[in-house]
Length: 288
Image (cartoon, rainbow, N blue to C red; front, side, top):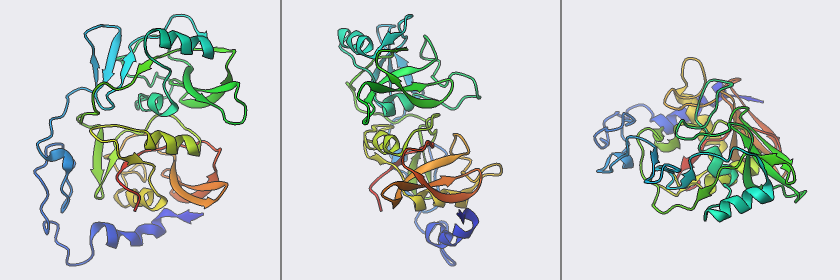
């Protein structure tokens, strides 16, 4: 186990060594409260931002997620359906079941035991079907529970809540507070309030179009460690970021069976097997 305090040597690279004046490279005017010295914030350059992320469409049955551009069924059927019937129901509306990543991004930070779905949505707040099937046993599919904040699998003949999504008809637009610039890189401000296995975290970030960008990925171990340089009082995570103070997946592999996690509560970096569960937070840009 590596203690994060020992990683503070990286601060010279990230925050600048002696003689680096904060205003050496002035950034753009701060319009979202996230500017840092010497960093130009692309979200501050004449980019309009929506005041609200979820907007009710002309038909009250639908909600548009402005940050992703996806259109969602605002409510869920009052009856649970098995996976096949749920898929058929969504298809009848020219919609589909969401992927793990699409559904997870809807989960917002809420007190434990409360529904993590935005108040823009109604219907059951229990296990929701995703379109993703398990790879080892094809008769199982993954479900996400916005109350328990859990990802698990369920036999497709069993039932769960159905929430349909339609492919984006508009591009992902910037939304106030959806992402934030920390240590020179843009991060999702709110981490999805659910733990997932490693490949699901990678796939969720790789496929993400969010807050005006489709260039998101899972951060490296060192990028996560960099966040600890700006640790808050109660957690090794910067105060600018919200989400569970817990273990987060990185894209950095330890072996072919394990990848590194950064535990912001324990202050540690350690590998874990790929089918273990952890939180994730996407970062924008190419892998360094």
